[in-house]
Image 1 (cartoon, rainbow, N blue to C red):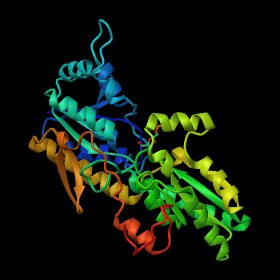
Image 2: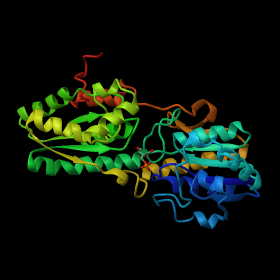
Image 3: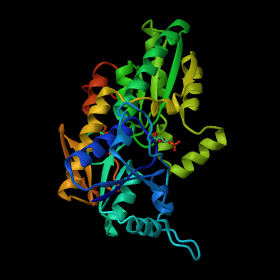
Image 4: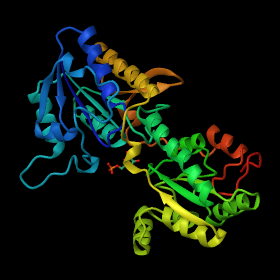
Length: 364
Ligand code: F6P
């Protein structure tokens, strides 16, 4: 069997552990396997950049962050775009799939990667996806690899700013990754002991956030920590289309809402505010032991699917059991945080504010 493997989209801890799990499985459990490492995601498949890899290439990478294959972002909407007299990226990928004589393409990636994987599958390629992202927003799986490593980093950032916030009596807003969804901010916020958690799924009322900070000050706590997702928005912004929202922010000199909110809190609550953006630190570094386990399990399961000839699917974790979904069922869907999620309920029950004025037990 000839197999190509690639990692696509933003990197995250666990990619190498998945690659290792998959490759070790196929080399040990299958006969006559040729494995090609495709460089820089779909970019390598488009440009025909790949090399044959041996089992020894996958040793010593379990705990390594990043990806030994390299990655790139190849927007899905440009895959079928045809420039005059040149084939689309999709056509080039299909051509190289044939040229490499592949029996299977394994794609490690997030939502965009899965959309392209589904497209390739619908065009006759044999594809198995594996769900990667620190955003944890892939439909049909309870968890994606990389998420818990990012929670670890982000949670510790929130943890660590407590001492400086408390010493100076400041309110610190920690802006975490998550353009569309708030999983990382919700989990890291709770794990790090944030007082306010703001996520895209729950647009916030600036007045309520100011109130939460002021209430803490009144109760004798002159510092507060706010975990805010980069995609968070206030209730006024939530009524706007994304393009309008972004251009309004740009006019005011903002990309995210965080600095605007920091200013509003400083004025409204009469406190000193600071903003911390850990950024790519959340995607960097080594996978946690949990992610090494999850990645190994998902990678090995993808190997099992390869062995059994189960294609057009992506690996998933459902109720702690490793399983799979059809690519065509999950592609293009986003797993948002349900606003009544048990973590949100737990957070509300211990007094964490989501800036929407709702309190635990009052419902609606
Ligand atoms: O997809 C993961 C993610 O980390 C998002 O949370 C973030 O918005 C995005 O990647 C930014 O990545 P890049 O700057 O690499 O495009």
